[in-house]
Image (cartoon, rainbow, N blue to C red; front, side):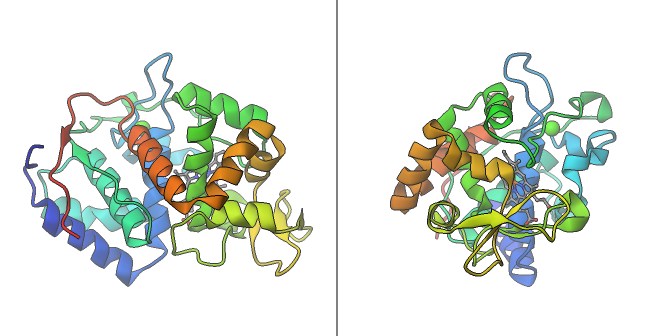
Length: 270
Ligand code: HEM
Ligand code: CA
């Protein structure tokens, strides 16, 4: 381990304060770190993942990144207060703090990500997954990123928290009844509810017949329709500890894609 050049304990606690003031920031920070990494192509080794390239045009304008200006702006005061941390490290640290704050796993953090200098680093548009599509598309995106089926299912389990916003994605609503909590409930809802088409939303999305308050995207539904994905949905629905540990490993891998020479930070006291 190597002590970073910023006060990581104080920074973690400042991120917790931001989230406790505005709970919907937690899921938004997780989505920010995910989309920053998801521009990667593991065969071409391009797309500038984990470099905070999303600060720049054209990437900040990609439709898939709608709404992520909010978590980026929320972290700006902390970048000013802790100028020694890179944006790229800050976004990832904030996502780990958010996951733990919401009741998810404590992910071992490493620092040393290098910020992109300008928009020349941005990957092309069209690399983020499309919620209107199903297993063929989902598998091609996650294979391009370098993840297998088990890691893919674990990662999409992040839809345990947060919600869709009509104004950002054209989809609407949360996946689970506790959108500020982080556990395996995305998987239990997926298996336990009777999912029917929600005719009130223009884009095709599903709602649970029992309460009609929950939603699933076509890309979520494909996880129970594809037999290989479904095996892992069943595993994680039964075993929250296994979900936490597999999610933790896959999310750490996601947030370290394309980086080199990261330093493990000393573990946080909790
Ligand atoms: C939100 C699609 C995978 C984390 C969303 C939204 C869509 C979406 C359409 C709603 C955005 C909005 O309207 O605000 C997808 C698709 C995926 C995928 C198609 C893959 C097939 C992931 C992964 C993670 C993740 C791998 C993290 C590991 C989140 C979170 C939110 C979200 C936390 C909620 C954001 C908020 O409440 O502001 N996703 N997603 N997603 N996604 Fe995903
Ligand atoms: Ca990027």
